[in-house]
Amino acid sequence: MSRFALLYMGCEGQTRKIMERIAYCLTQAGHDTFVISITDLKDNFSLELFDGVIVGGSIRYGKHHRECSLFIKQYSDQLSSLPSYFFSVNLTARKPERRDPHNNRYLQKFLKQIPWTPDRVEVFAGALLYTQYRWVDKQMIRLIMKLTGGPVDITQNTEFTDWKRVKNFADQLDQDFQEKSHPAAAFQKESSKNYSSIDVH
Image (tube, rainbow, N blue to C red; front, top):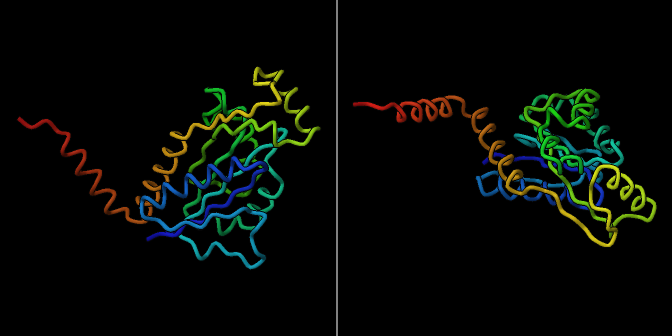
């Protein structure tokens, strides 16, 4: 059994919800998971107790949270020594062309600013939770939505997260980790699969 640290930084709970779904998928695949907000980590926290790590962070007004950046800078050496993954949660990803990590400028800008290169990155659309925002945030986000063609009814919440995409990401992490941990077995499995596809007459 492998142990994963699943660390997130968000505001209204959608990033935590996504991370918990990933944890569920990894648990189903036989891994042990530890899910916690970055802001709840103790001073003596260490990634050395884990076999892999997943970091998830949301965006507010075009930037990932400062706490997420500070965590990555503080733990960059440990992050780089483990199989490590990152996903960004933002509302621009509600548009199909912005779900591609290479086309999401918020993610690409963030990756250039941090001293860590994750093994895999992903982008998920978040949720527009008008009823949970402060009055000022509600008005600002409504204006942004109006400019970008999003929902503007402040009495309604809208979830844009594609949960099938979240599951696919978790499945890919499991596969990546298995290949890193057991490269010989992964090669044998792939070779067997390729051999079985040969049409023999």
